[in-house]
Length: 400
Image 1 (tube, one colour):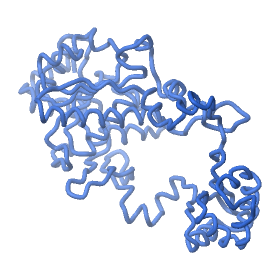
Image 2 (cartoon, rainbow, N blue to C red):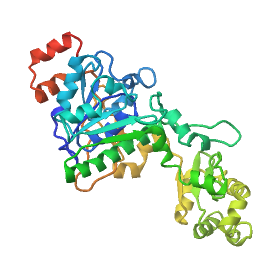
Image 3 (cartoon, rainbow, N blue to C red):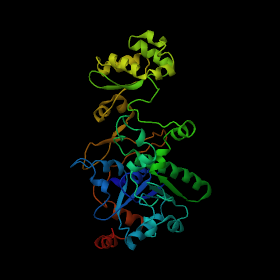
Image 4 (cartoon, one colour):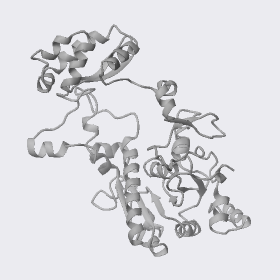
């Protein structure tokens, strides 16, 4: 069985019990699994995590990324016997990870105050839309709403239309990242004191944390950031330009880099032109500068544009899609994508473990298990000392 392969990475001595479903909490669990922790994901019997079905029809591939490297078991948390399984697992765990609506686990007798009595060293990671406290705590929270509340959605897109969104669940991923960061900080505290604690990670605050100086700018200047499409206002030139066969990003807003850009496009005199000589002047004349660069780029293939910019020391990059990633030599050299063992999707390539550690690199041992409860018997017999017959009885009664 694939789960018999040894775990590698800096967290191989840690165990995570993952409750919840979909993205934010499970993405945090993915990070732990990538870094070598024994992540045991608990799903409802018979139905599993809804993410198992997400994707284009016939290609539910997202699950294989978020659930990679995890052992997946089933337990009906609405029944006492299922709750007892979680309690027994918690006694042998370092972390309990969940992203239910606040109050749900307390209703089942699995809240932090209940579980810390079983394991005082437990670090409980709680991911939600709005947090465990506050007037919005009991609301259902999805990434889209958290991105809006955290300020991100308002500034995304073109100025003359409704706010846009990223093509990914950015709020969920940010919340999962911050949850993992908080959990590792709590682990450091536990190493010094022996005490566990609770991590309260929200989607909206995870988004808020990356919003730069948006709030102070309004507070002290009365300035509200607005949607600006593919540019940042007054930061020029830094934009997407269309070549004859694709798009590239050129970023040359620093004085010295702009001078090199002028040489690259055959207009060295522009670096001393009063409209472009300084950062402020370039910002004031951003549109006409972009039009000038676009006119130069429009007749050239993007490979030529990229090569000219590289030769002149100007930051440049093609606007990548999946096909570009799969064929790119830098991706290959750094193994940014790696083949992941998957019986259902042989040869599958996924984003590799990141960040890269020099001494204790993580590893993806397998894609998310296709079968619901694939590791139930393995985990319950190994950790809870149940016999196969006892597991079969629990399965027959709908507990696992």
